[in-house]
Figure (cartoon, rainbow, N blue to C red):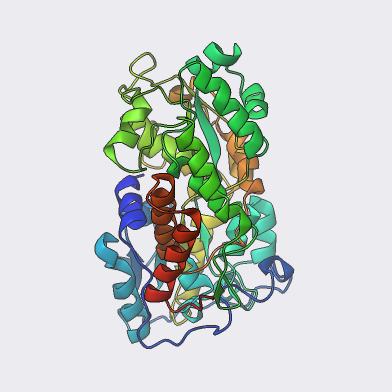
Amino acid sequence: MKRILALLLACVFVMSMTLTGCGKADNTTDSPTKSPTEETPTTVAAPEATNDPDVKVINLWSFTDEVPKMLDKYKELHPDFPYEIKTTIIATTEGAYQPALDAALAAGGADAPDIFVAEGAFVLKYTQGDAYKYAAPYEDLGIDVAAKLKEADIAQYTIDIGTNPDGKLVGLGYQATGGAYIYRRSIAKDVWGTDDSATIKDKIGPGWDKFFAAAAELKAKGYGIVSGDGDIWHAVENSSEKPWIVDGKLFIDPKREAFLDLSKKLKDNGYHNDTTDWQDAWFADMKDAGAQKIFGFFGPAWLINYVMAGNSGGTQPGEGTYGDWAVAESPVGFFWGGSYVLANKDSKVKAAVGDIIEWITLDSSETGLQYFWANGTLNGPDGTKDTVASGTVMKKSDGSLKFLGGQNMFDVFVPAGQFATGKNLTQYDESINTYWRNQVREYTAGNKTREQAIADFKQDVSDNLDVVVE
């Protein structure tokens, strides 16, 4: 998977856009008024989906070539598939993808997307926010939603994210992005005499108190527990009880506010190298090129495969830090990222679109996309193994990696997905997170008081977003 560039650009550049020609879905909240789990999955039989016999083209929109390449495999497996796939790929650089997609959805017609992909950083806009009414419920595509969700064992947080305000499932991912703690085996042995993941799990958690107790023990031996405060941010952000916006107003969840204190504690005690994620110093810490050796990073499997492996200083065990890593359960449950697949409610080939989307997101057989993805065999026998949305698939797949010293990462990442929650998001998260993290760093650097950092954060939100700030 070639996601690292798109992910980096999405993290840095993409801001939520105001949808042209589409009113706000809900003037009081950016989250469904009912919990998605109250109505999903439905037990109603799926309606009959049809195809217009005059339509010969399926339009696919994406921000990387990842899903387009999946459709190449789909066509290979289905030689009688009668449609041409017309692909539009627009990178998320400088926010280019969303406004182009919005315009195409609003314009409709023969060139409108039949299938479109949304990054986890902005997917809520299309499942629950301003643009949710463009997305077709999966059941309208002929998919037996309840049966397939159960059969595939899809993590609840992804269902929550992909469920619209009417309680209908409109989007799912193919990756599992539940997070774990990715740690150095050699450092664990030096400090605690073992690199066993069950032991490390108990050393670093559950909870932040145990995590900081472990940080003190590591520091006594000359190690940092993380590279920078950004390494704990996603764990903090996605373990919070409530989102940034509640009833249309800015809300600072106590767990997110505590990030001020957690970040300051890391810095004041020298528990990290004070790097900023996605910058050179952060990558350098993955191969022991920083001020002090770093014990671990928080992240999903994609961080291992597409970031850490390439920055470890080697390609085989014994080279750089390659092979000296393992994964353990995080002190708190969280997820990070992911790509979601949606269909246009006005598509004239809903049955064909439904077959494709079901194969990508809900097919747990050995000929489904996720089995190929989990076992690294989508494009040949020696591809990159990745965690997938289906727990059923991962339980029958081999997730062992040389980078992890032979550990089967699925043993940790399958339950990690069950611990994550998808009920604390809004469509403005990308922008708000940037404002918050900037102010936290100002506070920990000693440039602002805690109170001033919070006040300036609120002002940033008030000045830039259509959100009530009190």
